[in-house]
Length: 285
Image (cartoon, rainbow, N blue to C red):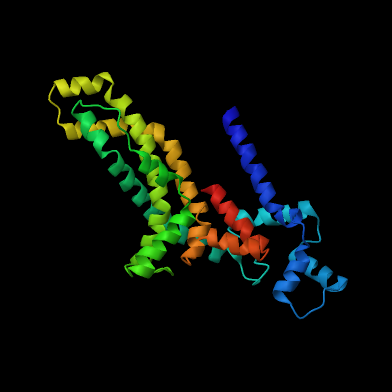
């Protein structure tokens, strides 16, 4: 109960901070809206007061938070300061794009992780355990920044070889390079963790008994994977969220209209309602 209460309190605190972002910024929100919508109008006090009254920024922090939070149950995420349009449709579309890219990246990560532990699975199922692990290559790949890997992949596979398109989003070919750039480091990390956990699973009594009773090596390897999966689920959850929210550089490089790129554009334009919606969706995820 205390655990759930603490989590609920943390959730409410983060939601409150998100709702108060217009008040926490160092710049005047009314001035930001003026520059975005009415660039030809002078920033007089009367004009700024009118913008504050129009957007509800004149009611104080609690009024701003209450107005923003009251719309959340109805799916109302506010209106963009730049375009004046509802935030929900654009941010929801960006989330769908990011989730699609995340799914493709996660598939790459799982396939790479299985490839890295294939040797350990084969040896362990046949009771020939050795101290060899996934290797230095997997560690280096796991440590590579996504933006660096994305730039290398775009240069080699797109510009030099012309195998895949470098920009845009819409067909399967345009998802290959972003999925590789995000999935390879994640897969290398998961592969190293899984490779470290498998020897302990193969050393358990069930593995020796299964081998003694003539169980096929494929079934023993599959059961060892199931034994190690629960310990890796928390890390897998962090990878999923990281693939969705930490893809700003990759989405920007490949011109993918995802949630990370949307949040970055909103931050640069000081369009705080859009930024609020992006952070809230990532928090819910």
